[in-house]
Amino acid sequence: MTSPREDAVSRRTDASNAQPETAGTAGAAGSGRVLPEQRSAPAALPQPPAPGPGSPSGPASPLSPGSSTTGAATTTATAAATATATAPHGPARSLRVRSAAVLAPAAVALLLGLWGVRRENSMWRDESVTYQVAHRELPHIWHLLGEVDAVHGLYYLLMKAVFTVWDGGLVALRLPSVLATALAAAGVAAIALRLTGARAAVFSGAVFAVVPMVQHYAQEGRSYALVCAAVTWACYLLLRGVEGGGARIWAGYAGMLLVACWLHEFAILVLAAHGVTLLRSAAAPAARRAWLIASGSVGAGVLPLAMVSAGQAERQLGWLGRPGLGTWLLFFAVSAAGWACARALPLLPEGRQGQPGQREGGQERERGREQPEQPERPELPEQISQPPGSAVGATALALPLLVVPAGLLMTVSLVKPWYVDRYVLYGMTGLALLLGICLARVTEPVVLGRLLPRRPARIAAVCGCAAGLLAVLLPWSLLVRSPESRKDDVVAVADAVREVAGPGDAVLFMPSRRREWLLSFPEVRAGVEDLALRQGPAASATLQGTELPADEIRRRILAADRIIAITDPEGQPLDVFRGEAVKRETLDAHFRRCEPVRVHGAQVVVHVRSGSCGAPD
Image 1: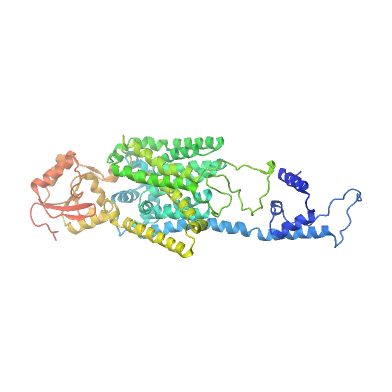
Image 2: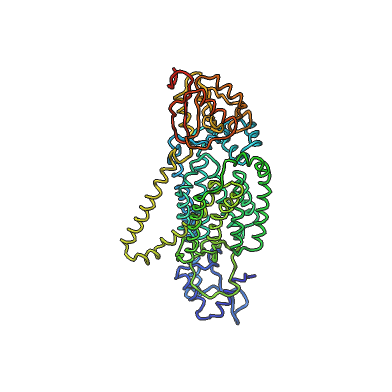
């Protein structure tokens, strides 16, 4: 029984009847082309032709060496053997190109992440929270998550495992984020490779790696880089699913998003972006149903975390204010840049992106293996096959990812302030895809040749653009690797306390949440008495511990002779709680204020009742 494709080819051959079979076969072999039938089947010995009318009904006699049929069979065997010998080289080279297109951006992101990873031996207070919580015992961590910070619970447990295996200080604290950023860059490249081609993959992944915001959180001991990596690969699995992926692909998509949401539950906003993507794409009904099932599974899986964290939201996010004008302007500027790239994509020639058969908008798709170029020829209806699923274009995937999660969170924050840009860091994946694909098309040789016909002009333009990008990005890259890129530096605060503290000195944290500045330095805390502390962080299942009543704090302050106050910089708003007001009033009324020691994001002020301000021997 023959396949429909073989029947169609047979009918076309019979209908043409322009050349004898021998000449057609020899022409295919001489052109170097290998028909699909020859590539898929192993080379076989030529078979003698079937007997025609009037031929003997018995077995055919051996062919004479000089006959034309013998020459045709020999040529066919030679062509098949040549195809068998050369076929692996094309796919193998393509695999190397694709692998390099994905791995090269990951290597760039890894190198950028490791560059200055210690950040001049600095650490800001949010990283200090990670460090000291990850060093607690598991029962204490579990107790803490029941009271506060459940949204970061999975991340704390991961970091607990990291420090258990290797207590490598600042490097161990930030290494998971560095590796996650490299993984996210590889994911961006893999998406671009599937959407457009190898050139766009390299550009998109590299753009993602050098974005200042990405570099910032690649070197931060918090969960945001890990969330970004999980969301990025979920986007890749979404493409696979829409293009005809089975249940395993959709299960992987749901599982990846569930991990992202358990690392930080605001990752669930990406489901809204993917919903817009499917609405803007010609997704098959089966794909839409599969996505709805996967989305429902993610929602059900994150529901326990949402229920616990809802009761902690006020303590967790109560410090946030509504987005200001500057935040809105930045959001609109970034969204406009993405929109401009999306509008430009249809106007730019696609060229040859290293993946023939894949085009913007998903009109043509790779069929699973590299096919040699075939001469254009009319297709019969039996030969036309539809792609396994409706493809998603770059714009349909990237623009909603950039705009929808951040826009939703900022809009909600007009009523309930919850927006911080790092909560939706994964939006940079969408921006990198749009910018990268545009750059890939603009730098196509055919486009550059039209814009700048002379080669020296092209070289000068490319070098000038590279120098301009370096001049813009290098200062940002240097800044994010300095202590000044964060709000404060707990290492500098601990060093300042260590310098001014003497035996018998006491300490006050004003406000009490600034106790975090010393929690990662137990040797410094052991040298001073914490006057206001009632119960430590681990024992009280809190992040900064609990404090005594205001009257007891006043009594203990008056019993001390020399107090080190660790406070916010001057000009910061003061807490109105009674305990904080009592600290300030008692120090002002009964102590002499010495010259403050100012460090990044904080100040250390010594208050004395008698004696000098210098540290006692």
